[in-house]
Image 1: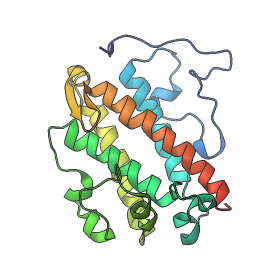
Image 2: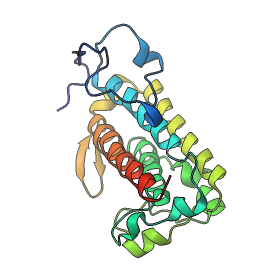
Image 3: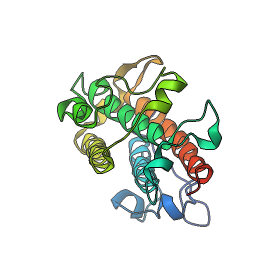
Length: 211
């Protein structure tokens, strides 16, 4: 059980919460929760704040990329993920958990707004279990349209936090193939932790493809 009504506190002397000493593409702390004077956050507030940081990092990861770099296999390694695949996979994952999993099978934005058809990408799959060959073959041919989709997903997540009653975060949901967990664990594990892992992977990939 995660204590969603408890508080998380303890700023280091530099004034940033925890290990939030990020700069450059990750951006500085902005937003109502991040800029407020208190250092006390509930678990939902903490996750919401750092999902915003994650979203900014993923948005900025697309800066200065050519189409070739977006789809290049980093260092030519057969098991490495392209930047395109990493961004698509994570955005699709967050879309699925926020809509389908947490909001009782509400259609993901990907399906509701027809992005799969408009981008010519898989209508249901979001990358988990894909072979390396399938992942390497994925192409984002309309980057502005895909960026629009990303923005819609980020906005949908923000809306969830804005509208959710406190009890929602304790609700048990099933995330395949991980099993049952609370909503706050889902957002923290499948959202934030998973997303930060892919952001680090994408940042390394940017270097390896020559950005």
